[in-house]
Image (cartoon, rainbow, N blue to C red; front, side):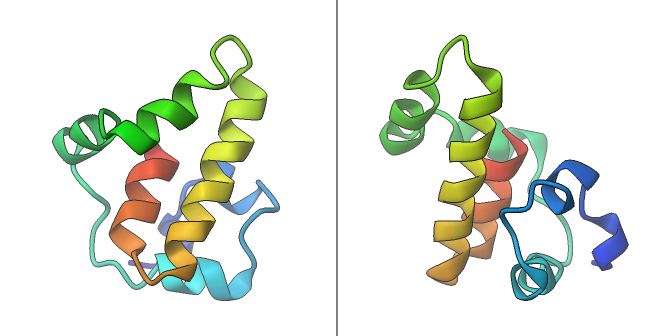
Length: 85
């Protein structure tokens, strides 16, 4: 994947540095809609998403921070899925 293929909201979030973005770009293709849909129902992810019901802006920030955490652990696939929910 090219850096230019990373969605603008991820790049513009200010949460991911250049190294993080390069790591995200190492995935050949982003997860499928089905993978993303299934991932959002994992207990840890449900807890995160439910904590910010009604506050989409704050939810997205925390969602991307958690995605960065996954990225730091080397789990690029989970980072992508969470960022794209």
